[in-house]
Image 1 (spheres, rainbow, N blue to C red):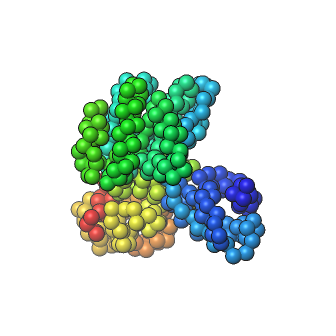
Image 2 (spheres, rainbow, N blue to C red):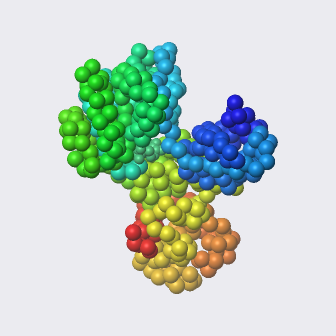
Image 3 (cartoon, rainbow, N blue to C red):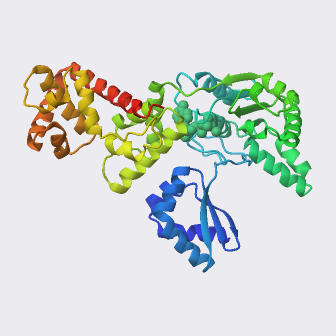
Length: 440
Ligand code: ADP
Ligand code: MG
């Protein structure tokens, strides 16, 4: 009751669009003496809410709960252990309770690194129990949770007759502890042993937790006996699980074990577009490519950077270029780009067109130098989103000369494919050059 009032009070203070955008996963986790804990399912949204809506939240807390309440927002991966209720089959996309509606097969880009996992996950959703158990493993942010949830979304929407459960191993453990404490172990067992599809994410969390492993072992056997579908995700291979019962490891191994790796750069570029679209869009393709090329840690980071830039664009109401992006998401990039991007551009141009920075800034009219200047100015405008004035400063020209050069370059770009190739080459160098600076 209090929770709902609190949420309502905040909602009233936020315009509808922002509400949908930023508060979709926002919830009250706990109200205790003098303290309210809110949860969100995304770290960047957490930062964002704290920064931009801190006052609003504070005010609402005061309104509803009175003076003297502190609040805190915590990050909580959206995980639900609820059994999906029977839903009407429908040709439309159905929201399956307990599953993230964004994590679907349709939204999953298949490429090198994730193809096998995708195929099997998809197969599972079409014919649950055919391949069981399935064990998908891979590092942080390679898309395991997305696939696991996609199975839930698909089965939930197409097979209302089936019970499907998705839980993190931590959620499973917490629920078990609660059941133990309240003497409700029977209910707990009933719940987990009477499902058609059992999906457990982040199995590695159970390392060293012998009691829960024991319970999982029994759940596993009960479900396998009934020929049910089991799916496990883990950040490492079964044999790499430490402090883990051998018999459970051998159970994992008896099915299909699939490694998932971070997709290659071309796939990441498409993923970047998908994520951007999902999160509200508006980012330039060049920028998305740049992010996909330069954030090679995990797709979670790629997503974090995209969300941040979309937010920034919306708040500032203008397009973000690579220069600003370098600054805004420097924490995500392979390395920090501390160098002035226009300096970097001039030096890249010198390399590509076999000339020197001083030649580019001089009055020289040699063909390669003219070309370097024109393409460089176009690049600075289009990709780096620099102002005419700043480009002028970098190239030692007036803004109007810069503007003429860009127009010429654009003309040539239309008819001359070599121009496009040069632009790409500069972009590539630009990313690589950014890569060398702090050498990660
Ligand atoms: P993991 O569970 O392996 O740590 P996630 O499934 O949480 O990784 O993926 C991180 C983010 O990247 C999620 O937002 C997810 O939707 C997105 N993502 C991962 N792989 C893909 C893909 N192939 N296509 C589209 N989005 C993806
Ligand atoms: Mg995960």
